[in-house]
Image (cartoon, rainbow, N blue to C red; front, side, top):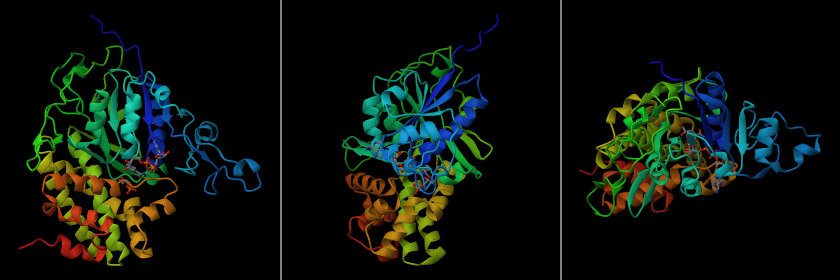
Amino acid sequence: MATLAPQKKHKVTIVGSGNWGTTMSKLVAENVVENPALFDKTVRMWVYEEEVTIPEGSRHYDPGSETSKKPQKISHLINTIHENVKYLPGVTLPPNVIANPDLVDSVKDSSILIFVLPHQFIARACDQLKGNILPYARAICCTKGVDVSEKGISLMSEFIGRRLNIYCGALSGANIASEIAKEKYSETTVAYDPPPMDSRAPSPNISPSGSPSTSQVNLISPGKPVTTSSRSAHLTSLPSEYPPLSHENIRKLFHRPYFHVRIVHDVAGVSLGGALKNIIAIASGFVDGLGWGDNARAAIMRVGILEMVKFGQTFFKDSVEARTFTEESCGVADVITSCLGGRNARCAKLAVERGESIYVIEEKELNGQKLQGTSTALEVNEFLKSQNMEKDFPLFTAVYNILEGNAKPEDIPTLIEPKI
Ligand SMILES: NC(=O)c1ccc[n+]([C@@H]2O[C@H](COP(=O)([O-])OP(=O)(O)OC[C@H]3O[C@@H](n4cnc5c(N)ncnc54)[C@H](O)[C@@H]3O)[C@@H](O)[C@H]2O)c1
Ligand SMILES: O=P(O)(O)OC[C@H](O)CO
C-alpha cells in the first residue's frame, strides 16, 4: 500500500530577536527555503517592540537623511530594510524573516518554536503562550540559563516544556552570534530526544522536557538533592499530516555550511553547559581585568569545567552524560569561546578595569543586550545554599560573592584553592 506524502509543512517561529535570536532567524530562514517540502517558507520572529534610530554601523545609515535620525519601530525596520539595526547591525536578513511584535500572533499555527530570549524573560513569554500554541508543537531552547524557584532548579528546556506541556529540546554551543551572522565557521550541539510518540503513537509517562528520565532537583527535601517525576505528562502526538521531526529533519532546520550541527540525546547536559559556562566566563573576565594573563584564565577554565561536570553529576545524575561536556561544542568549547570573546567575560573585565559594577558596564556597553552570567550566578548560588553545598563549588560561589560585594576578584586564587 502506498504511503501518502505529508500534506502539511512545519511553520517556524523564533521567539526572541536579540543578537542570537536575529542570527538564528537568519540561518533558519536560509534553511527553510532550501527545504520547501518540510518547512513553510516564512519564518516568523517575535520582536519585543521598541523604537530605535538607525546607527552608524548600519548599511542604511545616512547622516544627511532625516529618516536615519527619526526613531522607528524595530519590527517595521526589520520588515522593510531587513536588518535588526539595534541587535545585529550591518547584517542583511533574508526577506522571508517576518518580524511580529504580537507574541501570540507570531506563534499561530507554528509547529516549531525556537526560544531565544534572555532567560529572565522566558517565564513571562511562556505565560502568554500557554493555551495559544498548537498542542503538538515542538520547541528548541537556545536560551542559556537556569530557573530556580521554591520547587528546585530547572533547566530552561525543562521549564519551557513543563510550562507549555510540549516537548522541548536544546541548542547550545561555542556560538558567538556576531561571528555566525557573518557566516564564519562554527559548530553547535542540538539535543533532541523526543518520546517515541513522534513516530505517531501517544506515549504516557514521558517528561515534557526531554528524555523519559526527569532531572529537576527538588528543594522540598532541602539538604538532599532528589529528582522528582512530578513532571510526567501526556504529550500530544505530531499529526501524521506533518513530516516527522526526526533528527535528520531537525538538522535540516539548523545546519548551514558555516554552522555545523551535531545532534545528541542529552538535553539536560546541553542545557546545563550553556547555563554554567556563563558563570565561568565572568570569573575569567575578572582575572583578565586584573591583567593576570592567559595562565590565569586557563586556570579559571580548568576549575570551572570541573565544577560544571560535578554540578551535572551531582544534581542531574540521571539525565546528564559527562561526555556531553567534553566531546560536544556545548561544553568545554563553549567555555573557551565565552571566556575569550563573550559578553559576560568582556563586561566582567571592563568592570575590574574601570572599578565599576558589572551591572553598570552592562547598561553602558551592551546597548540593550543582556548578560546571562550574573543572574545565573545568583540563581545557582541560591540553589547551592539551599543544598548546603556552596563550599563544594568554590568558583561558582566566588563569582556570586564578588557580584554581591562580599569578595574581590583578587581573592579568586585563594577562594578556589582546595582546602586541605
Ligand atoms: N548573543 C550570543 O552570542 C548568544 C549565543 C548563544 C546563545 N545566546 C543566548 O541566547 C539568549 C538570548 O540572547 P540574545 O543574544 O539573542 O539577546 P540580547 O542580549 O542580544 O538581546 C536582548 C533581547 O531581550 C529583549 N528584551 C528586552 N526586554 C524584554 C522584555 N521585557 N521581554 C522580552 N524581551 C525583552 C530585547 O528586545 C532583545 O531582543 C541568551 O540566553 C543568550 O545566553 C546568545
Ligand atoms: O556573549 P555571551 O557571554 O553571552 O556568550 C555568547 C555565547 O553563549 C557563546 O557561546
